[in-house]
Length: 412
Image (tube, rainbow, N blue to C red; front, side, top):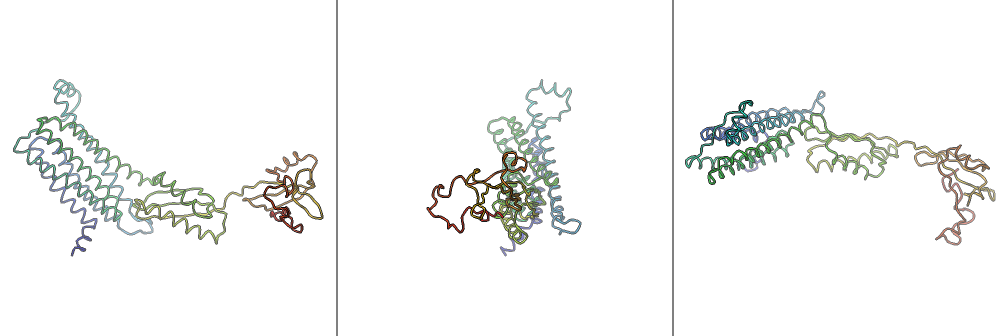
């Protein structure tokens, strides 16, 4: 029985219907009480709850559409429709914050009659109604405001938890909006207590400005997140930096040439262009390593799913030339100990760090001009005999296989 109840409460549809019921009760009580005592904060919050009912019903419709499976026309499904809800809720909250701030400013200005009359002469300010609260209404205001604040904070955590568990961004956004309601109601409670015990009804209005700031902050965050996802904004510089680092930690990856990321619902999509020197057989293992590390990182954060597309390419050839000073002695070629000992110059074409072609030429009289004409990047030769190299044994290599033979360096 308990397991079935938990499963039922974890359903996003059940969650949102409970939220709709909560908003209906709160709106009826707040609008009635706020109108009775002329409190723009309480009445305004009640009308805000009416808008919340519409938003909750919209979230239900959006969740239903987002859960439909992917098709050929919608290969990623319809999950991004949830971010239209985030965009809409954010915009509504920004407009509500503006209206709330205006009413609070009008309430403050009413305490300066001369300024109030001057501003009303050229600005269409809303009519101000002074706050009415006595011993009979105080207890009701206190209980309703405190109870509503506690209920909002509990329900918001419930919505966000279910939204994250089921991967529904619209449910998380609505939970954040409910949490902003709770913060509004907490400040309203502080205002009610201050007005009653300090006999200072003007306290409601500066608190109203603070509340408007909270609403605007939440609204802007929701609007921006929805806007970014709908326009396929990247998942963030910090995430991309970590993805690049994890790719570079995979053995065989030469570089990450390109990385594009975006979000579809609660799924992160990564498109990578990776450079490697390895062949097709080895690339299969490199691909597995990249997918494992990137998936592990993304799913440990806020994403419920991830899709990784990897394209491999060979690095640039990085063609250049080097040369070795070699000497012909005892019917064999050796790396010359110095330029004076050299009889020939071995010109090597290098691609991707490997020598692919060699040409042996007699040492020219004008060595500098020769190196410039052949576009040789570096010229190598031994400086001194093997015995002169520090740490070398007295007879390190038998005469039959001298360590400075060109073939031992990969040279033909």
